[in-house]
Length: 389
Ligand code: PLP
Ligand code: TYF
Image (tube, rainbow, N blue to C red; front, side, top):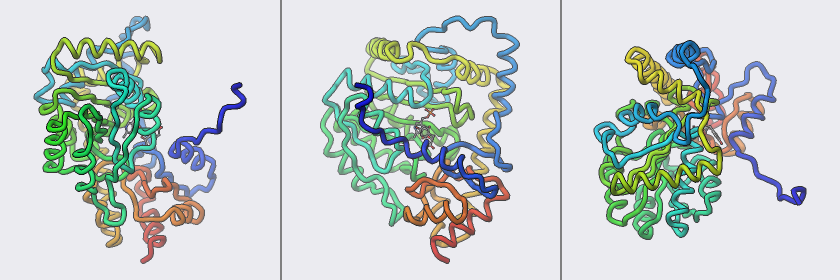
C-alpha cells in the first residue's frame, strides 16, 4: 500500500531553506542554498532577462507545443558559450531540459540504457542530488575522496587512482567548474591528466556545468569541458542556465551528447527524447525562450555578459574579505564559484545557526553570495569567533 512506503530522507539543502525561512530573527543571514544575492541581499531578475521577457510578451504569438527537444535556437546559441571552437562539431547534439537536474537525469538514464552495468565514479563530497539521480537511473556508484577538508586541497592522487582502476565503459562524473560544495576546481594540468586517463581507459565523462561564468569567466570556466570534448570520443554534458541567467525557478538547462559520428549522436538523442517523453514529454518553454532572446540579440547578450561579470566580481570581493579576516580562511581566495567549505564542525554550524542566525549546510558549505554587503562584516566576525581567534 502507499501507506507502507518507507520514510524519505529529504534533500539536506532544500530542508535547510525551510529551516532558514522559519527563523524570524531580523539579523538572519541565509548562506545555505546556492542563489545569488546582490549587495542589498536581494535576488533580482537580471536586467537582460527582464528585457527579454518584455520582448517575449510583446512578440510571442502562440504557446502551442514546441516539441521534445525544446528551443532549437537556444541550443544553437548555447553551443559556442560551452564548446568554443568545437561549437560547429556535428557530432555534438543537444536538447533542452528542465534545469541541470533534468539534463543529469536524462544523461544517466541514457547511460543506463546503453550500458546498465556501467559504474559511475563520484568524487566526494559532491552536490547531494548527484547520488540520488544516478541511483534513480539504476546505476552503481563508486565513490572516491575528491577533497581533503583538513588539508583544504583536492585529493588528486586518490582521484587518479580511482579513475585508473575503472573498467572500460564506466562513467566519471566531473564538475565542469565551480565545484559544488567545495569550490575546489582541477587546475589545467590536473584536467589534462584526467582527460588522458579517460581516453586511455575508455571511460565516459559526464560533465556537469551549472555555474559557467561564476568562477574565472565564461571562457575560462569551460576549459575542462572543452578539453574533454576535444579528446574523448563520447561525452555527456549536463548544463544549467539557472544560475548564470538567474532563472532558477524557470528551470532552464540542456543536455548535450557527443558520440563518434553525427549519425550515432542523432540516434542517441532519439533515445534521450524517448526517455524524456516518459518523464515530462517536452520541456517548459518560457525560460529557454528568455535565454534564446537574450543570446540572440547582441545588445542583450553583451549586457548579460556584463551582469555575469558583476556577479563574479561580487564573489571575488567577498572571498577577499573572508580570506583577509583570519589565517584559517586564507584558502578561500584559491577557490571558485558560489561555494566554499569552512573548516567548521557540525557543532560549530549549529552554533552559528543558534547564536548568530547564520544558516549554512552542515558540511560547512556556504554560499558566498548569500549575504548583503552590510552583512559581510558580521558574517566574518561570527565565523572567526566560532573557529577561534
Ligand atoms: N549541478 C550542480 C553541481 C548544481 O549545483 C545544480 C544546482 O542547482 C545543478 C546541477 C542543477 O541545476 P538546476 O537548478 O538547473 O536543476
Ligand atoms: O546546491 C545548491 O544550493 C543549488 C540549489 O535539489 C539546489 O544547487 C539544491 C538542491 C536541489 C536543487 C537545487
